Length: 262
Image (tube, rainbow, N blue to C red):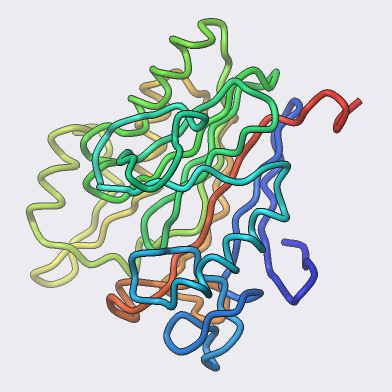
């Protein structure tokens, strides 16, 4: 993590090739109340559909955009498996759960609280993608779908992945329906679930690794930040911890333009 102006905390994953990524944390914006920090101020909520003041969200998105070479392509996420080209996302009328691009300077973005953000990049920087992997979309194959679309666009792409902050294994209590959904798609991932009384705990990262492996991403090319949004209220929003009135983080990735990495 490195600090940025206005006390904005960001995590900057490192990728091979001319690729940059950023994950915004909770502080550094202008939102207040439940969308602020733990003290109720300076929240960097970028979610426009969580009850926050629209003007604050616009300002927060502008702050996030200053970290990037261009305006991120904000869309509406629906816990599905649709993948779109970031440059085709004109506004939030577009519904999808993953963005990809081969265009330098175009910024892919997904929003998360407890869901798992997955940033993907070709090692030579020819294509990148951002995936919103909540449990429904993850169990339905959104990561595999994104990797497939990336390899359609760049057949020789060799992908690397970064797994961002999400609800942790010990914090994500679910029912049998969630366990069954993952077991049906990833039957070999025995370590992805554990029983706790009559409920279960699920490890989103374990299933993401299985999805990436199925997509040809080597385990050594997967970097997991290992951070739980639920367990760290000072740094992260969490829907499961705080309820519907909480913020969203931005997971952003782009290919650098030649003049930026020359």
